[in-house]
Image (cartoon, rainbow, N blue to C red; front, side, top):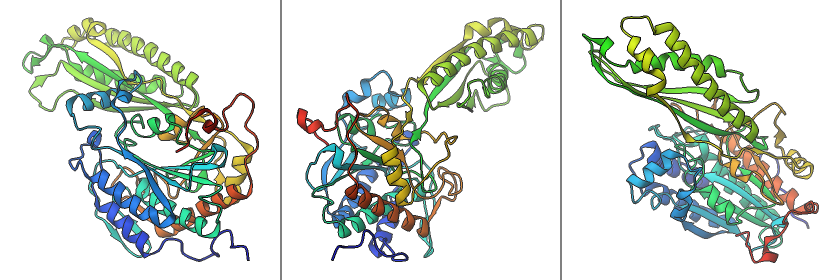
Length: 451
């Protein structure tokens, strides 16, 4: 008798061992160094526990190591990454990535890849399980989805003997997803080495909707390099607080909607914390996200124009004041625009065959006007012979990812595991159509590898 494609409705896919694994992962403080993490062995330990649990589904370790340091020398690596690596010789050593594979190497056309991350943002969250809900940092982003993924693969492998024989499954459990690393030393090197499939799923909270898009982001750093002054003679110095406050409002207003389809976040502003001095130095940060490379370039140009206009307006408004005349006079000279990161790719994929497979497995397509969000999937942009989507349980907003009170419901994890199991079954039953001419359907023929 042919095994059923997936367990009957209502049959739990996550068992007690999965619950224990998730609680163990949640208890490990895997915030990376860019998030101020102070437990350098925690991520490696979490990945080891994950690999041990993955063996239940037949997945074996292909690689568990950090990337080559040469990846940090690329010009598009965020400045925060370069600075951290220069300051800490053990930066990469503490952040390995784990690559797992079910079965032997098979052509890319018969391979599915899942990407998860076990690193988290900073912030201690009490870990507990109520019987229906898991609480803790990383519960929804993305330790919970990572555990549910294993349960789905395990169910699919039990029901489909061809999985791990005729169909390959790769799992990337990467470092450097959080903290502004943008996947530059985790996901990016693995994809560049060919460790991806015909179908690629990045497991992030999307409400179980398939989102074949990922925005990229730029970080603009506007600095003031002026002179301080005592509070009794405020006119003697450059007031970075007033200047940057003005620019924050001006840029926020001018850039809002300046390039359709983009988003602007006026983020941190810092000068000083004391009341009895004028701070002549300070920093304003803006994060600008976009879904198309051309839109990103347009937004960068709009920021440059808005900044020059803002400086001119500051001069007009404050040039005749007693306390800020010097700041107004020198504003253009003491203000500088630096880019902490820019020119990163954005993902926007389409494939009727893959999208039909996902919908049939229970992953409804996201509305066309949903731009997605920034995650490591951006590095899958333009992969030859491949389709990539972002899919996972829960919601970034509703489940308090990156915020106090992060949680994920067991029912959502179960549903995601079921989608994974059905998706793998459908992938096994419905081979992918030929890859369009000019794309590389199978790097094995050229001596490359999918894992």
